[in-house]
Image 1 (cartoon, rainbow, N blue to C red):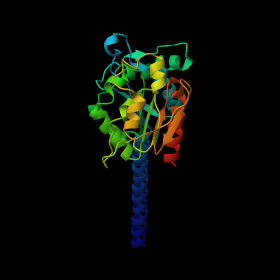
Image 2: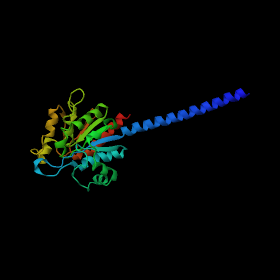
Image 3: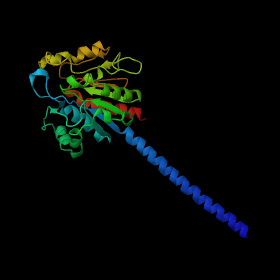
Image 4: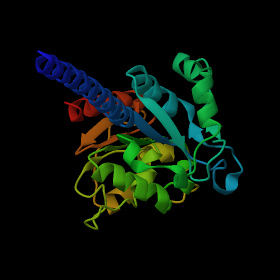
Length: 265
């Protein structure tokens, strides 16, 4: 009888141990899964550090609606947004219009106002933590996006990790020198759009910007698409998403979200 009790006690204790072990294992797996999901939920927004239009002395920076509208779509869908700029710190802002209700919501969000006024430096970014990178426009991007090798490397790593590379208006200046591991330019043989040559001429800055963005993208092998000046146009091709102008910013946000949902299935 004593032996039977001992055996039963041993079985009960073993069951308890295995149950506790199973629960602990489940909790650990749940925690790991949560961490993985958190990483997948992050998107990196790139904004310019440049605050002058060439030698004109006119102020520039990132264009507010080109940040706020994609942010509104993606943040609203549950994604966390981080901000990086070539120099880090406070990013100069242009197109500051709080009559735009989405601009107002973004600007009055304490967390994100703090983030964009204290952007990270490229050296602080861990590419594996991001499902997508988005280059916001504003004329400042024409001076400090194209030749920033650190940002280009981050974008390459995100893209080659099955992530999304996206940009709007002058933001595609950040794409012109991105090269993949194959040695090919990211935009080569892909449908791409951006602020067009006609739009640059319309705002009388064709002789101020360091290069014409449409022409440079075509030079890099892009299949350039466009609509009439200042009309919305969003292009999606092989996890690269580009928008033509500020009017396209909301649509770029929606296209990024659609592509992320596709990748997460």
